Image 1 (spheres, rainbow, N blue to C red):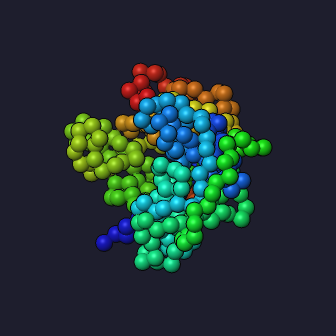
Image 2 (tube, rainbow, N blue to C red):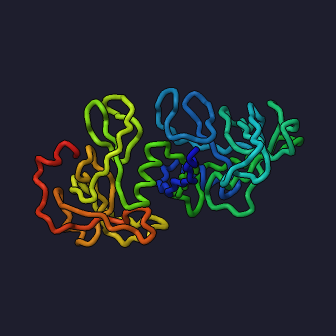
Image 3 (cartoon, one colour):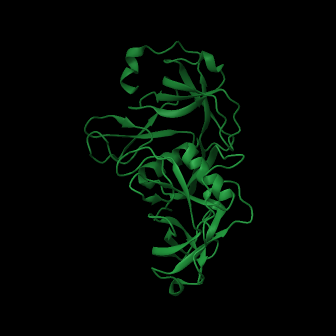
Length: 313
């Protein structure tokens, strides 16, 4: 039985956003060990605060302090914490209605096991030792048997307000390519590009998926395409990607390989970025280990006529 291919993959990017006055005050308050909510016209206090009433859509701005103590309304046990979660040991995810609030805040509860947490238990914020104006300034919640803490009545006005945050987004997963793409990957190792032809519409798909997305039938007939192809459309990249050793600006293009029924992605090199154009004829330049083309470069042929690739835009 052939080996099943699989590989760990990570998709990660930093998401940067600015903050409005409500979220700015909330996160600045956490930095100062203050939990703020926002009061609605009918007297409800929402924590975390939002900029618009979820019931009436009315704009909200009346910030009020609530206590750092509260009550667990529901919970779930996390027996295996993942990278970036609040605690490195097993903990409970809890919804906590802080004293003075009418809605619950989601965070971690530090307890030794699931038998130590229950709906209705009293808890208190454990503040992080170093705080920067983020939800992680609350390190977690911890059990609390004392009286409710009394808020000092802060109204959301602080010095040096937090005006923006960077939230890293990351997805870790294991990818297994399946029969069709495993053959495609094996072909690349031999410096060949393999597609599969649909038995119904006769279109050749590269990379192959094992089925025709148009006709809905399985594909199995392998077809070698390229190696040359035509740029059908492209974009100029001006933002340098993390861990990618390519100087900007550079061009990333859709390339219709000769004999293929749709275009694949590839970087264009060997030509100034502002000279890349639709119809440019290109060929692959393979990486040293031969596993995949590093980029595509011009062949020197005349540009392809638009009519020959317009269906693959």
